[in-house]
Image 1: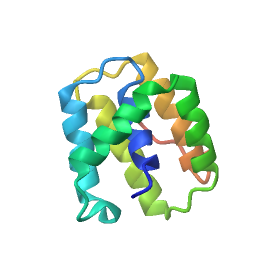
Image 2 (image 1 turned 45 degrees about the horizontal axis):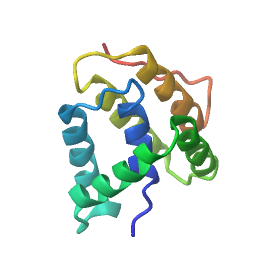
Image 3 (image 1 turned 90 degrees about the vertical axis):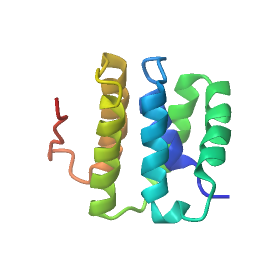
Length: 124
């Protein structure tokens, strides 16, 4: 089975404001279908399985898992930038960026940036 961590990253931002819209789910599935590590995988079923596990956990527990994953992540700068861009698009998918989503994004972004002084701007 593929590592579900990237799906957890996407879901963490998408569920931060407790309003998981179909537009966010569709965008997550679209992003994963473009990811080479998920080629040939039934991403719909995979995301559904990860989502069902995700919602069983307290929200804070999910970030503990993500912190462990993010502290050892081996992504190129291009891959990191791509994930950050994906997270921005997921936040914007329903047309409104909520405070909780932005806070979740900021928590993840600090691990993805190799140089924390390099800002990533959210498109409005």
